Image (cartoon, rainbow, N blue to C red; front, side, top):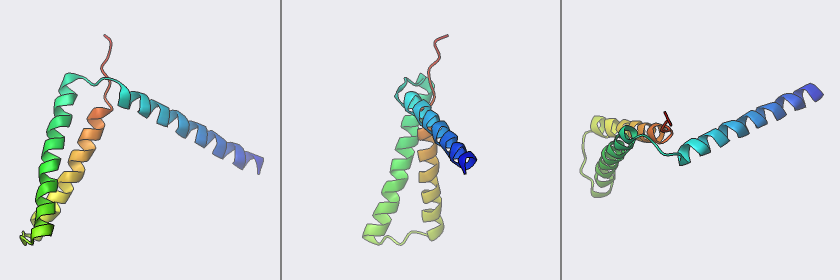
Length: 92
């Protein structure tokens, strides 16, 4: 039982360290290239979100394949923006 307890304590400590690294990287300054990528992905994802929301509120009845593609595009843009936010400018 002690081995199991120690195992999970180590896992929790590792998770805490990973969260600390993510917090540091989130607050750190990103390179200019990744700032531009983040802004572009937010604009594209926001536009796709607007189309999906307008379609559902005003009954535009757009093709379901288009709405599905836009939903995937929103997820992809969110992933790209989050990833580019976590890049850190090097001091060299």
